[in-house]
Length: 64
Image (cartoon, rainbow, N blue to C red; front, side):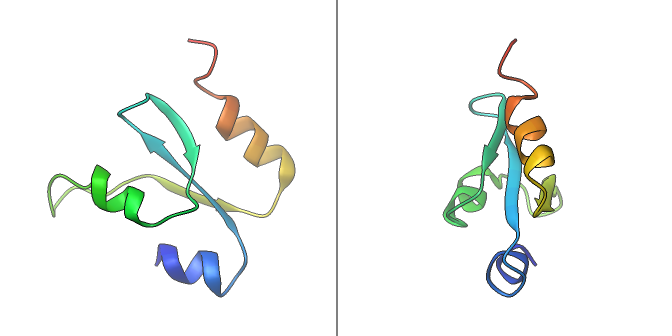
């Protein structure tokens, strides 16, 4: 699904990366492979083309 959203719909994807405890831009789907520890646990991936949502997500945890 993430690949489809990125490649077919030209959306920007952001995901919460627990390693750095913030949202990061998902440019390489291999990041999801690194994050995926258990098959039954999903991840929170946000897809958007709206600039303000990108900025909000990427700055959401940066001040903590």
